[in-house]
Amino acid sequence: MRHIITLAFVLLGFGVKAQTLIDSDLQQYVRQTLIEGIKEYGDDVNEAGVVIMAVKTGNVIANVSIGQYKGKVKDIPYGNSEGIPSGISRAVLYLSMMGRLSPDFLVETGDGSYKDSITGCVIEDFSHKRGGFGTLTLKRAFDVSDVGIYKAIETAFKRNIGQYGAAVRKTGAFFENFDDGSGTFEETDSWGFWSPCDIIGYRSPFSLLQQTAWVNLVANRGKLLMRFNENDSTTPICEVKNKAGLDSLASAMFETVEHGTGHKMKSSYTSVAGIVNVSPPNVINCRGCFAAAFFPYDKPRYTIGVFVNKHDKPAGRNIASKIAGRIIDFMIKEYLHLQRADEVFR
Image (cartoon, rainbow, N blue to C red; front, side, top):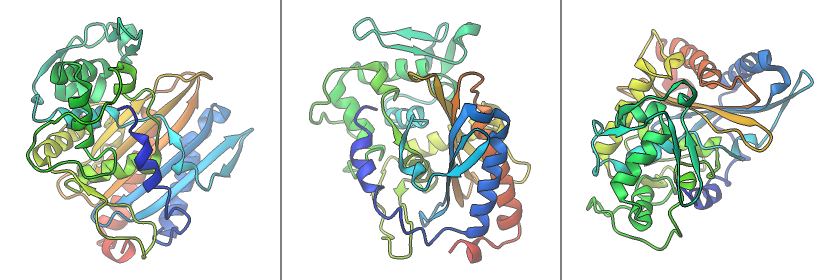
């Protein structure tokens, strides 16, 4: 997903200061839940954030970013607009392949490790030290395997960087319209050479606001909006035309929560579709723990994104997803079941 940050970062840099659509009660609950969710890790967590959006309007209704040092918590006013490891790479790549490969396409992940002979890039799944997952469907690889998604990308585009680039742009990941509705994958301007670590997103930082907005696009049938105040435009920033691909991705996200690694976001009140990820360690051995979801799955109303920057091990998929799950249950009980959503989140 190389170069994915450039335009999107510019677009989401505006409007962040005027957050008049924030719901103060929800903001307070989210902040407290985030503090409670990271306190057991002490100073091993130096930054964490939550963004919540209303699906149809794109309204940002909660935006909390905090840091932790020596047991003290501080607010980071613009933390969620800063670049963090990408947790949505597999989702973007999955969508880019829909139309070329089916969700049932079988991919061999072996022991969960891949090394590129040209660039030296190493991609490893969290299952690598336990022998890997072997053969997976593309839909299952979306949840658990960077190796599987990357190998499927190689099959879909045969290392043609131009066709790959055009397909990724049509996912809305650049926050621009790049689809004439024909469904073709035409080559575009040069993206340089084929680099597996760039493609799988290891070197593509996104802000939490960006990542949540893109997940909201999936919930909103391809329409990407993000509004911070009443004056912000209600016209979508861009729209993804691949509706069948979006449906397939949403279904894979639902399976991730119902039967996969996102089970901590599963709710007894309604259906939830989500994404979970833990990034490889950076130079100071920090891993980005990420979870995002929209709910209800069949009639999406809200989208949530959670990020926890965790130093050293353990840094598992449950860290961010447990926080997301608590907030989802709170919102379902307090707003959806009481039919207060339209009044509170205008």
